[in-house]
Image (tube, rainbow, N blue to C red; front, top):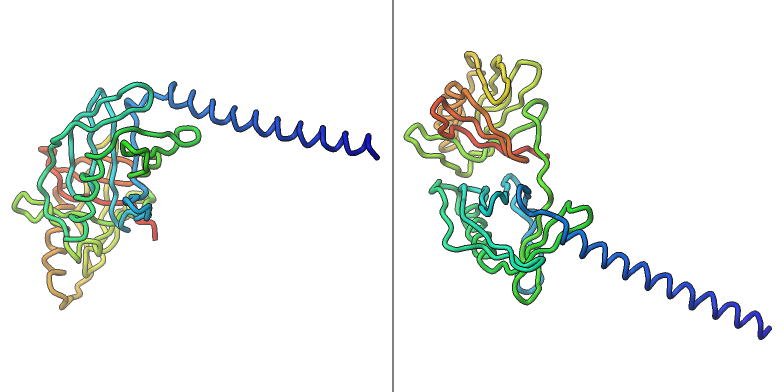
Length: 273
């Protein structure tokens, strides 16, 4: 019996040592991953905010906030406007955003503007970063080591067979506008036909796309009239913008249709529901 107890105790101690070695190994692996990972040329999409009380706030449905690191420059989308600035890396995982940053001046809904302001406020507090498993997630932390922003690695969507939902539409006067009706405009590109909803009516048109170039033929629509305020104006701007599109860009879950001068006509986000 005494020998049995000694044998059991020995195995328990051996198991604890093995677990301790595994924990140490995992920690070392995480440290080595942070050392070897080059933040440059990486792209991320925000998953959630974490406020000072530890409350997790998800990104609003129908919006996308993105961050791109490249050559000491920081850029992306704040959910409404494009932003640009620079950053500094210190020691192994120290990170700071150089303020002030620049941004475009699009008009979006109040809730989207508030989310964007929160994002820029949080960015200003960043002091370090932490990578997740296989560098597929990124957490930005403040100087106390508390999480502020949680990102997933950005995986580009494809133009075709992806349902796109508008987030901003050129109003015909050079401005990209987003309001309570914008999300009603949708499009799907597949097998040479783009179709969807223009706000009130359904539409379809033939298209060709290659290497970022886009050509959309004459658009056909149904002939409904919607009484809700602003929807018919939205539809007119959306269809006009579609007809002018000759280029497209995809960044993660976002699609941008551009005119021949490279000006933005319509911004979309991949529709998840």
